[in-house]
Image 1 (cartoon, rainbow, N blue to C red):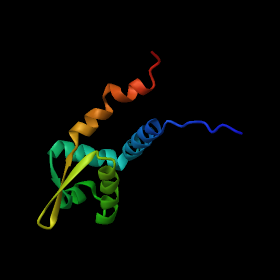
Image 2: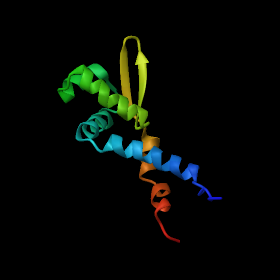
Image 3: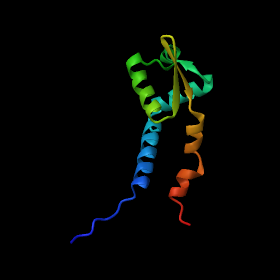
Length: 105
C-alpha cells in the first residue's frame, strides 16, 4: 500500500494568502493607486478616476484586486465609494511574520 504524504494545509493557505497580496502589489497602477490613497488618507472613486487618468472600468478592476487582497478599505456613502488604505494589513506585510516563514532557526 502506497503512503500518501501529509500536506500542511495551514501553511499552504498562508502561502496562498500572501501570494494574493503580493500579486496585488506587483502592478505599477495598483501601487500608484495605493500611493494616491495614502497621500489623501481617503479618496472618492470619482476623484481617483481623474487623478489616475484611468477609465472607471479599469480603475474598478484595480480597486477590486486591492480590496480582495485587503490592502485597501471601501466605504459607500450615498452613491459614491470612498477608499482608504488598510494600514494594519499593509504594516502586517512589512512585519516579521512573513520573514519568519523563511528563517532557519
